[in-house]
Length: 630
Image 1: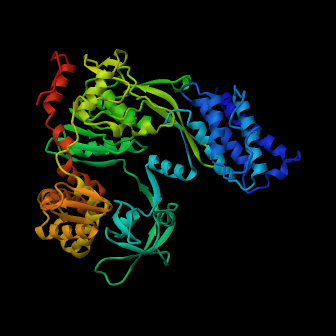
Image 2: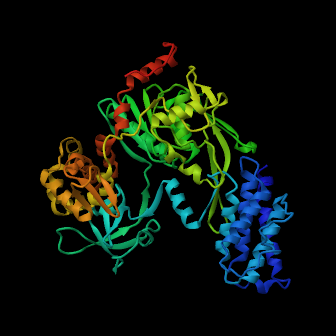
Image 3: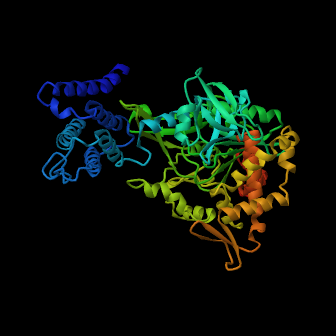
């Protein structure tokens, strides 16, 4: 079976290469003398098309795929004199009906060669990419083409590591400023720290670099060396570092810490290759600190690897528990996935936090926990992505991501929300959701009986539009965020903290660095600090006036009533405190401060442990109904 499958993949591509090679001996060679790599472009189109036909979970319409690819390619042609009517690129498609992949490729090849013959200055690589995008526009919104440059970054993100010097940086006033050295990385080991300005790389100035230039110069193969010169505040002479590049982990856990003596908190930002290992390491550490119940934060987690979602989910269940199933028109993509072991947290109370940014793998985990009445799902209705993708590399290191199956939660529900061609309305649907409670209620009212399912113990759950939480927490709209958002957009909190640490870093570290928890609980900004912040806000465009009753934007300025800044300054205090934590202790210390100050959903969730206990009683047959009472 493996070799038969291999033949199906290799033979058509070899045939294309042979045909294109033969063209060079049949008098057509002169039309292929442009700067375009025609063989590669045509092979790439064919590979993308075959990836769909061989793997797509539904029945792709070859006719529509071909027409959309030609339409998009022709719209992208820059030569306005190119004749369209009655040619191979005629977009009227009179009497055209594509019935198989060979016809589709043959017609595309004619269209491609027509353009190269008649518009030799066209960038055929770009037009081929546009044709592939047109092809994919006829599918679901999650089946996409990925350019080589983006493909490399995506692979790094989901592989869980890259190779480089290990710093988080930001370009500030044309200078590379280190936000933090990644823990355990080569820069941190050499003593590079937050606030350092990288002014030279390999003895050449680094001032004026873009983010892309920094990445290109500082990343490199493990074991290679790079010389970096930094200017450190209050140090008169520049400092030279010879850094040996190494593997730099890209952590998928934003935070893991104890909320109180019993409650652990873990926030996962995506499901990549290292997520389960990171999760288990965090669980082990938190158990040693006394954790007996867990808040698992999957808010704004867009998903990732199905295997990692399954690995995380099974830690909450005994062996043999169904976690998810997948269905496709291709038998090889069908599957039922069960917990293969007794999970490390199978008997402990759990609350899962979700919102409209929780998708895919996040919904697999929260759906399994909800369907089995295993824990409480809290927050807002999730995104609604019930499709599984697989990525296939093309000839030029670009890739296509093709939806290979639908997934179903243990109760049998498909949580995929409706989508329309083009995907724009689909993607922005979450921004049209109003108050979380009314959104959920309206969704439930509109769900047909065919999309209503029951959990193990008879609670009603819903398909067709994400996971509706057991307990809904609306956004906190009681506090004006105008000043806060203005400060973030104009980098006020970041710049103030950077200047603060430049001037006071040694003194601050001497007093606070050895005890983060004391900083978390006790540190306060002084009136002098906040007066300086207000002055910086005024310089950046905030205007205090008695002519407005509420904050109002006009061009780049924010007009606020007299006294308003003092009312909302606590927002900036909290953000700046979190920024200090990030720059002094590292990224994972940012979230405890942010959560302490701003996270109303988390604060609400930790009052619901009695409801979790009643849900457990229901699952164990010791209760007849489940309602949340506070």
